[in-house]
Image (cartoon, rainbow, N blue to C red; front, top):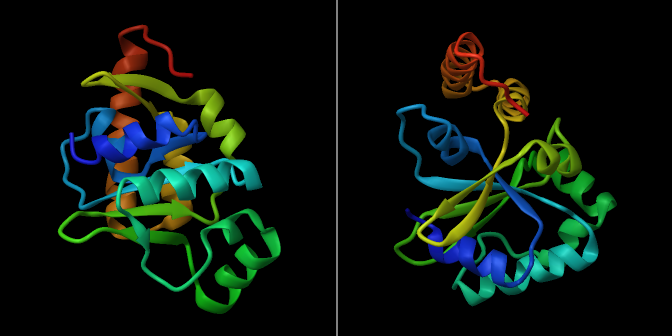
Length: 168
């Protein structure tokens, strides 16, 4: 799995995160591609500090000249959102895909973490957002590919419901 080194670094540094976006949609069984990984993180100062260390250890740095710790400051996040239209703080590493850390979400981290399913991927635990959380986030984003993801996720949920499975 692409990004396994980053996810392992997040886990080693005890970062509280949930994988959202395209990678989470894929993990739920929707056949699609993605070029990045989206994360919803606990935005407490301690967790953001751990996030900064984990991403730096994995070789990632912000694409824009900001202090990573400012993710934990609601006033600064609101400024980024309102003045710059920022939806995520992007991190990059040469010849690797981007990592997007959401700065705004219709689903708060606690709710997403409670509903997440943890998958083991090559010995690394990976928390994946629930279908319900993903649908809410995709509705919030509202881009054409998000609407396509919603349709696919709703079909998966319908089939699972018909088979008697329950979703968190």
